[in-house]
Image 1 (cartoon, rainbow over the protein chains, first blue to last red):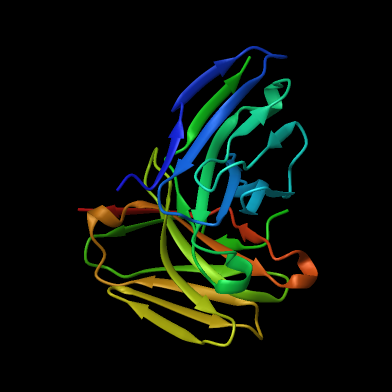
Image 2 (cartoon, helix red, strand yellow):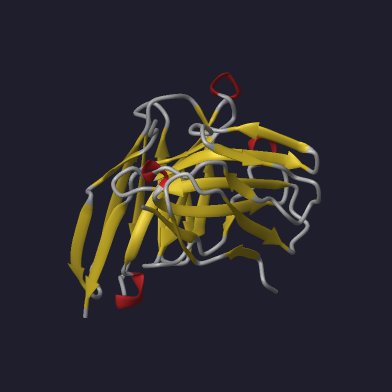
Amino acid sequence: NAGVTQTPKFQVLKTGQSMTLQCAQDMNHEYMSWYRQDPGMGLRLIHYSVGAGITDQGEVPNGYNVSRSTTEDFPLRLLSAAPSQTSVYFCASSPRDMAIYNSPLHFGNGTRLTVT
Amino acid sequence: SQQGEEDPQALSIQEGENATMNCSYKTSINNLQWYRQNSGRGLVHLILIRSNEREKHSGRLRVTLDTSKKSSSLLITASRAADTASYFCATLRGMEYGNKLVFGAGTILRVKS
């Protein structure tokens, strides 16, 4: 049972490059989300999705795009990388919309991104 | 913006002692959750307490919630070296705040053997 799988584990980008962080879950979870973790700031919500075809912005969405074409996958796209996007990125899923069903998040192991 | 503020930022105790971590928040909430993060790994859910609950137990974990003071505490009893990790509280804000789960900056716990 893989749970939430994130790839790659590490990535170095140059300023202005674009890339996609992959996230896949095999638990048939409806809710998926992306967070970034920076030292001393906890986790901040970037984008989330309550089901296939539905996405919404979180707290810090600028510079990132998402799409949800299937229940399993929720990729995060960096359009034009900036040094301020250097961070650890976590994908998390939940069985249902956690705002309604009080269900906790299941996290992947993260992608450590450095933008030079 | 952070919702939960954990206290202390770091805690170092001996194996067998109890560890208490506190979390304060600012808005109304639907529930409060505690997560653990081992170094280099993702967060793992520990316990969820609803806004109408006051105390919850899970194994060696005890969580309390005081909505009048907007605060929660996580108690780990008889700590073990394997409990060394960062601990985060997360609050699920109400609909008026967009139904978002907001994390604090965490408490780093070190259990010395």
